[in-house]
Image (tube, rainbow, N blue to C red; front, top):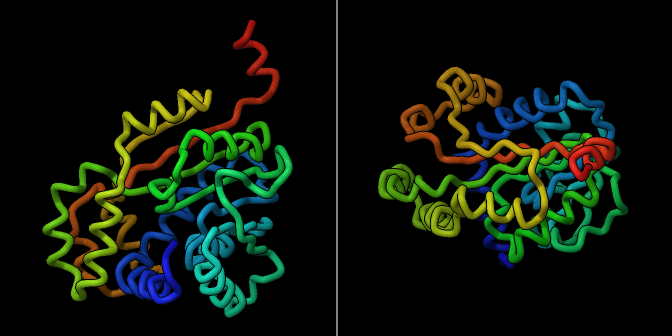
Length: 244
C-alpha cells in the first residue's frame, strides 16, 4: 500500500500529466450508459477521485467510491468536498476482493488504473459481477501492455524522477489482453468487449479544452496507452436461455 507521501505524489502527477484523461473517460461512460438508467455507480480504486468528479458533473446518480488506501480516500474526500459533491458521493474503505455491498446494487461499476493492482483478478471480477445489477455495465480501463516499448519516450517527457517511476511501475505491472480474457473466462463473464483505447486527436483536444489545460506533449504522446473492458451483465432470462 502506498504511503501518504506517495499518494500525494501520485495526485500531483495526475494533476500535471493525466487530468485530461478523466473528462474523456467520463464522456465514454456516459455514452455507454445512455440506454440504461444509472441510479447508483461504484468507482473501484477511486484514488484521488478525479474520474468520479468528472462523471458526477455529467450524471446525477449516486456514486460510491471505494479504495483500500485511507490516504487516497482522504485526497478524494478533499476534492469531492471542494466541489460540493459530498451528498452524492459516498467514500468507503474496502477491498475489491470482498466488496462491502449486497448483491445486485449497482447499475455501473467503473475503474481506472486499478486492475493491475488486483491480487486475484478472477475473485475481484466475480465480486463485480455479484454486486452489478442485471443489465448493468462494468467499465475497466488500465495500461496497455504494448506501451512498454514506448516507455523511454514517455520518460523523456516527464520532468521529475518520481513521476517517471510512477509511469514505469504502471507499465511494468500492466496485464496482457490474453491474460485478461482468461480471467474473464474463469469468472464466467462472456458478454464483453476488450480493446485498446485509441483517443482521437479531437477527443484529446476536447479533454484539454474542458479543463483549460495547455500541454502539447499530450498531443505528441504515442497512442494507444490504455485498454478498456466493457462488460454488460446479462439479464436472468438471457442466462437461462444459454443454459437451455
